[in-house]
Image (cartoon, rainbow, N blue to C red; front, top):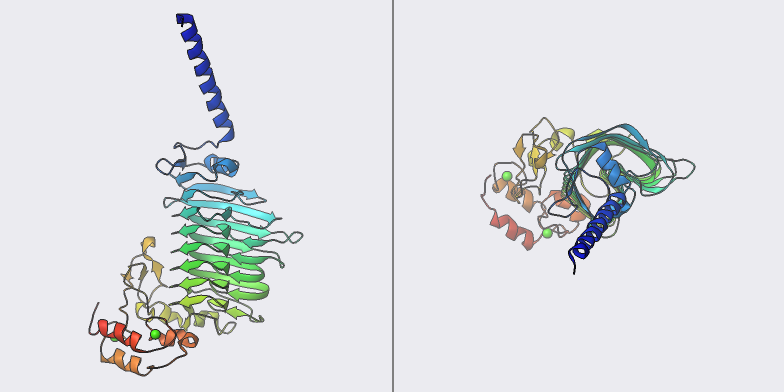
Length: 395
Ligand SMILES: [Ca+2]
Ligand SMILES: [Ca+2]
């Protein structure tokens, strides 16, 4: 090949690569660096980076990491901010997204993310002072601040000052997630409101997935039925584990309402709700143990919590918080079998355990007040074996 031919070939290759890059820039979003791979996620540091993801459905299977807080300065959307099913990883990296509203949305699956697929992950993200409202003319379902419909995994996320105002016909509304079939792990919603027609919960409207070590402290109201402080309805295969609600109500005329959950056909274990706070509107819950406000702020009463240093409490001052919040206080580390006092497993606990021996209806009474250590529904030798294992143990 002549020298001229080689030069022409190089030019053609150069132009081809340039055209490819131009095409890539047109069809992919513009971020603050990274290539969207797990090892080098796209960086999101500005409003325009976030809006770029919003406008680039092709990127919804990529990896993202936030490198700064993002203030959307009261921008209004009329649909989800990220409106295509999210299949990638969105790592908030401890940062927060603030001040957006989704106003009069006319569809279902509404939130910062409309839906998260089963391989999708959202983690370490705060969403602060944001609101979502549904249209009266075209009411939808699966509506929340963070994710409308979650099939993926949401970890260490929170909503602070979140308002979800459905129409009087909207269904499946929660402050964090509208409808959950995936996993929610160590998340919370604090200071906020959720309102809708049916299946309305402080954290999640309708759950058939896993809600693990999470809490809600919001105001909950519905125009019809199935209203819960944490979860509206916990459906088959729904698991709610080590959670609590300190949500408030101002209405009691529901067929199904619960301090923690209004109607449960899944499993609920080691969960609590502030029954003093909901009085006189709500006096029961289908799952979870009702406690006084003072009890809720004491490590000792959170029977079944401990061993993994997930929860902390400022004793007598505040409700339990997640260790990752770094709120201070003591780590909750209740030894299995230490029912009656925090000093360890001793004869007082044995008396408490013996008083409930052979009870077979523990599901109806907060796991027999926690004495059903293995959560089997009855108190028998399996529980005694666990109790003996921890005999005289102190923390
Ligand atoms: Ca004890
Ligand atoms: Ca048992």
